[in-house]
Length: 338
Image (tube, rainbow, N blue to C red):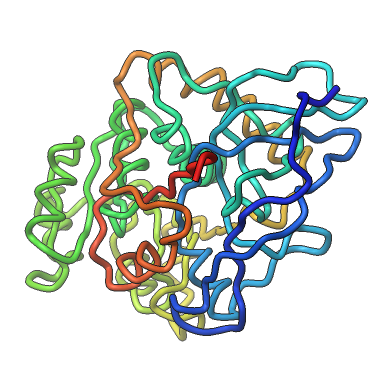
């Protein structure tokens, strides 16, 4: 049953044509209607993520059936629930993982991809959780099989993904290392729990890690770079090590000798999240609720937010992200009274 007095139209941020941040423009569109397994959320805040920038440039189209509007995560209040939704009701405060549509005053989300806002957390903080926490958990833990006592290297440690992965690695009692592109960023990584963060612009991260580990190397690597780091990553992995690739900022094609993969019995894997089914994303949500939500509610793990912007100023947030000026997340805040 919907809330009363829902508007029929809303402000949203659309991609007017593939291009730079200026391609993001405020438009007035119809409020979306939830399907039987969906909820309609009155958005209070929406996280900004690098895939949003890729979509804006025409490089990451939304999956079939998803909203053409950018935005992969929101927090807000449920104002309508589909007929088949049983566990969420109108009035609930939730954060949600989306396949698109978050840069708007209202959005729909599959109910299974919604989680309650952790106790003691603001909606702005909660909006910075779903995309990075779903991504990190399914890749670092489900695919990478990171365990207590192991050593993990997080590339891009100051990014939203990186700041999340460092904290989850620390909470799992792993020994965490990270790379980042400035001394300010490496210091932030170490404050979050990295034993050592390496400025890749000044030092060869592979040589530093091998020295720090007495030549033993690393159990798990979470990599957002891809081709440029692939050979170094393989060299760094211990026997039985796992390389999890979740980004291709350094390219997607690499040529290498396959012998180390065989002799060290390495696992090289990777994944994307956006195109997975609601059932798959729902399973990740339940795992997060069980394992990670207690850490968020206790404050042991917390999203790192650098700055907020009004929804209508999404272009400025994209410009900052693409200049690699961020430590943690950027969040768009929705003013429904404007």
